[in-house]
Length: 263
Image (tube, rainbow, N blue to C red; front, side):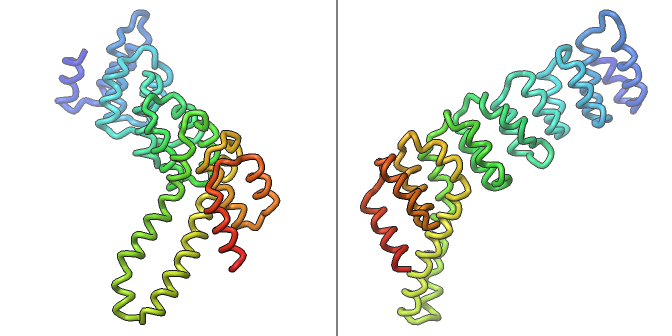
């Protein structure tokens, strides 16, 4: 089969070869090689027919061979579908995230991510949704809530805060060159407040998720929600959170409440 295909392709007879292969699909005992080779040809020369072919004949394909062809030709959506059919969910999730403009579909990704074996892909997915689909991040987190470390998820949401703070620290010498020390100190003080607000803003993005998992009484979740309630001045919810979930930094909370009242 491969020799025949190579013979036609070397002579540029792509259409004739595809027609020949298509005519063989209707044979009563058509060999798997015909379905697979036709899929490879579609991947190279007729990509608009590829997905339909894969879906119609997924059980009659040599999937590893077609996976290689789709990878070589950069057909990411079709590659993802083949990985799913072959139960390679880690590769499917990775392909979706690495080639999201073509491969990403929210419902499909949720179905895939709960089946991955590598737990690090959960956190890569959180980063991915934070960057590309923040409006859907709670929906994702609800699906993987039983599989993730809640502390680590909260830390991911705080990460932008630390990155920005480090950048400002590196820029401090530039401030010293042009401003007086008092002005610099006032800017730094103001920046701390702004950074705290920015951090709480990112935490608010996953507030529904944190509320849903707070029954686990994880300190990072409790403290994040308490920060949000302070920022929102929702002291009823803050009181309820403190009463029902006692695993948090009490001194740190008191300082944050005091700082909020001073503002």
